[in-house]
Figure 1 (tube, rainbow, N blue to C red):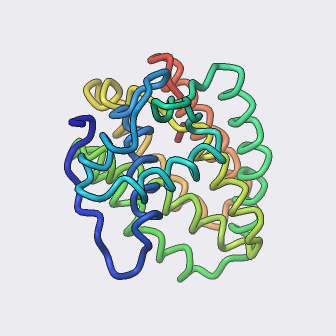
Figure 2 (figure 1 turned 45 degrees about the vertical axis):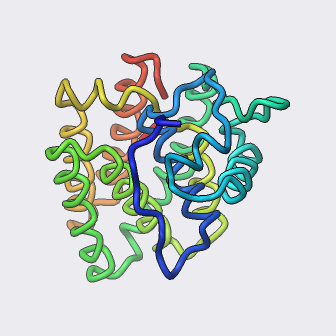
Length: 225
């Protein structure tokens, strides 16, 4: 009880279970829910203003993703991500996303790439406004929408899963130092390079971006982009 900021979860297009799971992932990434801590479904349900059932179901979904683990008669413990895990997740993302960005640069229609600009601008706006949840959501949308232009749905699902498993802690500290803004601006840089038709430059930009965000998280002993 009292762990999370109040959020309006009810929409017409999502199941309550999915909404709660999404909000819990955001809380994990932003650091509202801390690694190693145990949280009860009834306590979290009170924060969300819902019954315990959808929270318990959502936590089971997160357990299948490796984000939490059940603790008998107590609730769910947030799993900790170590440096080795993060390095491996980043390596896999680099192997997938870098060549894909190069291929998309060569094949995607200009209007499809330009359609990503509002999302890239939203990432920067959220970073400047210290809106961590908005930053993370816009960042997720941009990366997955960009990969969607490859036409490979399984590739997008794989990267989406990697992003969940390599979630980050300590974003508030990065935000206070102003380092999120530079990372955010790299999305606009990448988009401009792709629109210029520079596939090699886009691959280099994506490689630098993934390495940059990984090194930022390491400063706080945290963890993702």
